[in-house]
Amino acid sequence: MRYEFADCVLDADRHELLRGGQAVPVEPQVFDLLELLAQSPGKLVTRDEVIERVWNGRFVSDSTISARIAAARKAVGDDGKAQRIIRTIVRRGLQLAVSVSTDGDTAITDSTRNQQLRFAPGGDGRVVPYTLFGDGPPLLRIGSVIHDLEAEWRLHSERTRLTDLANRFRLLRYNKDHNARSNEDHQAVFDHRINEILTVTKAAGFDRFSILGEFSGAFPALHFANQHPDRVEKLVIVGGWAEGRDHRPDTKEPDSIRTLIAEGWQTPGGGYAIGSTLSYFPDGPLDDVRSMVTEMQALYSREQKLQSRDIGNSMSAMHLLSQVKCPTLILHGRRTAVHPLEEARKLAAGIPDASLVVLETANQIPLPGNDSYPTYLQAIDSFLNAQA
Image (cartoon, rainbow, N blue to C red):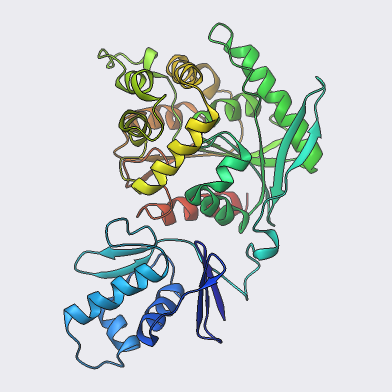
């Protein structure tokens, strides 16, 4: 049996661990520990289970167990501070915090691990890049940490998320036109977004499909669902907001995130730039947030980031909510600060028969490695695959 997770392959038959395609030597007990965790991704593995499997139930000291855990983390490119792959659940046990596919799954394999860009000709003469992979019900994802297909794929956290989704759905993503931005005429921007969606869904052969709108992707998702209700099967909104900061009566203080961008976005890897992004992901993992900032600083100027922040602050979806006709699920972090839980409650209250699932995180959307990430995946899977 082969277990694939993060950039690792654990081959139980050959008793071999590969990371990034290179063999990593590990002791037998470390290998057994990794295999035990890989067999139950996302689930708690207790100390007793570890002792039973790795030491055949014999007495072993805490320091010995800790040493094997540290060695396992090092072997897969993790450490005790980040705990990006192997997480300690205090006083309870361990958890493999990333998704795992096996050679017995229909999951994404090496042959499809490198995404293939496709190009859909738009009516305005512009070509829209898109990707399509996975099997299952058709799902269009709109909105992301970073709005670039190739940069998004380079991020470990997003590649893991996309692979997890593609293991459940036929996943479609596209590159939106960044020139279609205007502070004066939001409707013109959303009309452009709707045309992009029509272009890529036609190219992908999607006639009727579900939409996953994350972050600001909630707004084009709502506009499209209203204008083309015959095309949208179901709608999921994650980390979205009903009204931007400019519309909220309780936001009298200066916009600290905008200040961080204005003061420090031009400094590569600087604390101000990281702080502006960490505001959305205070639960981390920090290494993933740093990677996001590196990719975004290479793509977007300070002026573009400020414009994006201003647009998000000024938008409102309140006039759209009552018109949504499809089943809708709202997912939102309980402790989010940038767009707080109250904004999700507005969405759920305004959309007829919408349901709200509150995730136990401060992140705007969960990242792989967060405790709430498995709940996020399960909720989306259950909702979109439920029979009407």
